[in-house]
Image (cartoon, rainbow, N blue to C red; front, side):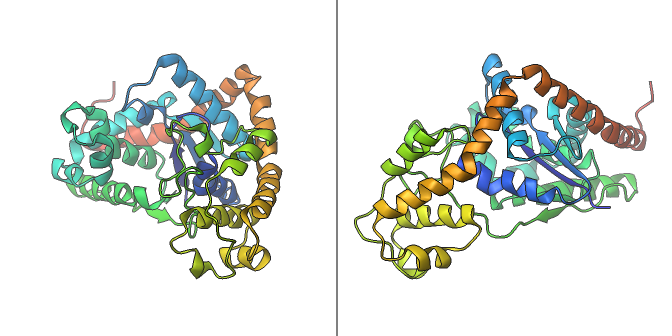
Length: 332
């Protein structure tokens, strides 16, 4: 049976882009019998996190995932740091992976920027820990975006080298699970940039805890151009703001851009923004209300995460034990 694993960093309330690009797909995948959803707080500390903020962000992420429809009873939702197999297998993979492999990782270059010497060693070996996250559960299917494909390729390299070094067929190949073309949700203030939690302008993004009035204000203020919407998606080329808003509408309504433009082509942005606002409020305000309800019960949230960690550990511990035996560690 193929096991699905995916993780998300606790970096504050997710945006509409996070929901459409990842979380909504997780919910859809739950028709499969065996899914693990991990809040990857060990990955979060590759850059400094203020402790209280990290705790708050972690609970917020758990609350949002549950509010979006993650079923923590049928499947497993847990904190990465609560299952020791992640860090222990991650260290073993640090010793399996080659420096040359890590030097080719483009995400490290992007995140470290020009001052690579000041980046944490954790950020550099991040892909090895990601490999451990997956292989601690013998997961073989991982929903990913394009920016994570290279990390899965490295995870497979690590699995092959481990198997070769120890003369076993222990780790199985990992398959990237592509959910179809993910909507690329851009900033409402600058549609040449992705919608991001790190943008200093709150007006640039729609957060999953925004209320109806906030959503309406942000959509009303979203940058547009003076031309009406075209009837043909090809005519959106060179009009990034129009393409972004049409793409959001299409993703939320479960259609495509052509269908949206058949309905709204020729309309001015005032009319279209009103329709988009109604759709956003319909889809997102139930999530915001449920998130608020969950956050009002931190004891219940922590209990859900604790139970998930116990279930995750029951899967990962035998895998870690066998790895340790294969590499020659004495059983204490």
